[in-house]
Length: 209
Ligand code: CDP
Image (cartoon, rainbow, N blue to C red; front, side, top):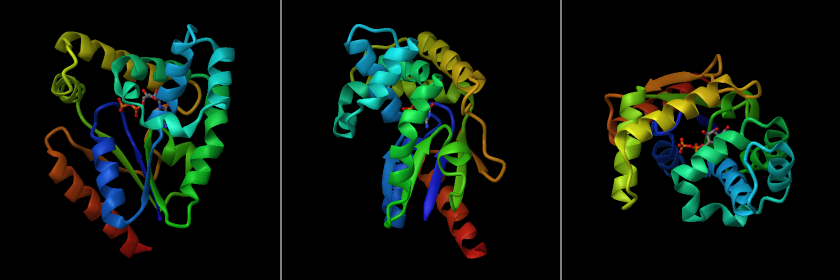
């Protein structure tokens, strides 16, 4: 079984996708970490994440062993990620890795922006997780403060608005729900309620097949 979990930043995709993978006994890939790793690699080499040649080079040299680096979770990496993610050659370079991961015999949950539309259009279940901009910014702020990172609410909100705009407006693989995705709005749901709703959707889909 392949489960695609797409949606904007801080909608609760990561937490949800990880729990779903555990629950259904599937492997889990956070595809955002690939773009974050590429963005950070460009920054660390002193480059500009919007520079197509530098970003493509970093994507081709990406070592999946480095995907657990905690620095990838910061806002600087998220911002650089959304810049390299708008470069078509970067997306192409990362596609094979994602598709091979999805094709594992054990099945997989992949979360990102274009899993249901581009990476795995044949996924068995597609979830599109959303929440209002304000709720997402609140969650991201709390996440940062909990990690001891100093952050200002206004700034987090503005950065999220910019990232949403960049992800939705880009010409390649923009952030849009697949036609056959099930929408789940988590604005008023906590992590447990979102998980229960997603399990229900997946179980219904499986029964229908
Ligand atoms: O955790 P959060 O939702 O903030 O971000 P993420 O999922 O780690 O993704 C970081 C950035 O990578 C996004 O803003 C997208 O620009 C890009 N991305 C993408 O274009 N396609 C994916 N499949 C995953 C991430």
